[in-house]
Length: 61
Image (cartoon, rainbow, N blue to C red; front, side, top):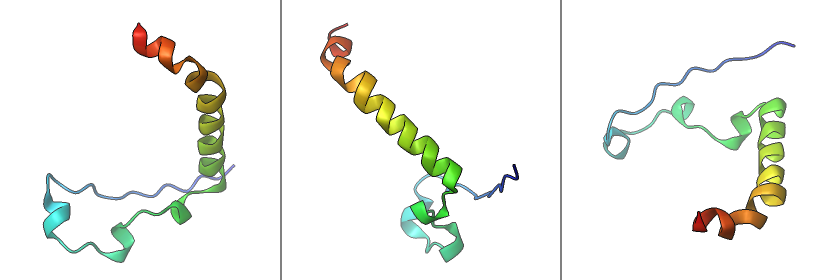
């Protein structure tokens, strides 16, 4: 399986507030690969089924 790796430079401190971003620097969900989307769906399903039902118990510990 071939994997594409995108490298983006993170903004330093609050510079993202003062500088104009380049279009290529903006990340959107459209940038995700199908595998990344699937991992996100799997994580969301896990949280909904396994974590949220126990949320009150976890908070009280």
